[in-house]
Structures are given as C-alpha cells and as structure tokens.
Length: 88
Image (cartoon, rainbow, N blue to C red):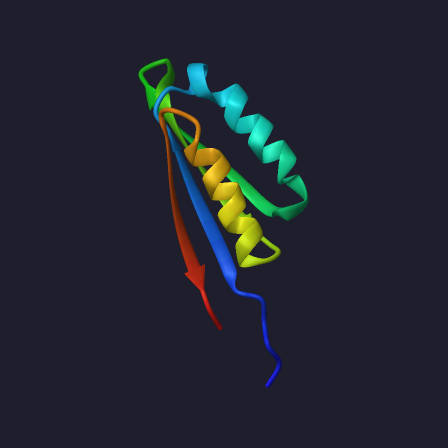
C-alpha cells in the first residue's frame, strides 16, 4: 500500500482584519512554500466587510513545519489557530 502525506488544514481566525492582516500576511509569506491552498472568508455586514475573517490553509511538508507555522500565527494578538489532520 502506498503511503500518502496527511492532509493538514489550518484554520486561522482573525478578530480584527485591519489590525492583524499585515502580520498574518508576513507569516504566510514566510511559509509560502508549505501552503498548497489558501481560502479567505470574511464576514459581510450590510454594504461592507466585517472586522473578522477566516483563512483556511492546506499545508504541506512535515508536521514540524506545520507546527512552526501555527506557533508563528498564534504569536499574533487577536489570531486563533486550529488544525485538522486527515490521515489516510
């Protein structure tokens, strides 16, 4: 049986996008080689975007690299990170 790399999904909740987005983007740029897919979701309040946002990342590479990414994101005030790992 062929071994497959686990699917790691990292969910990043940002409470104040205007305040935290720049720091989050810096971290994501540093780990860009390990991000296969990125999906950004934001709240919409009437005619404008709400303050909070959610980014879903499909992360590749080692578990240690994914943990390093999570730790870097968690250092940013107002950012919450959760991970889902699908083993085959």
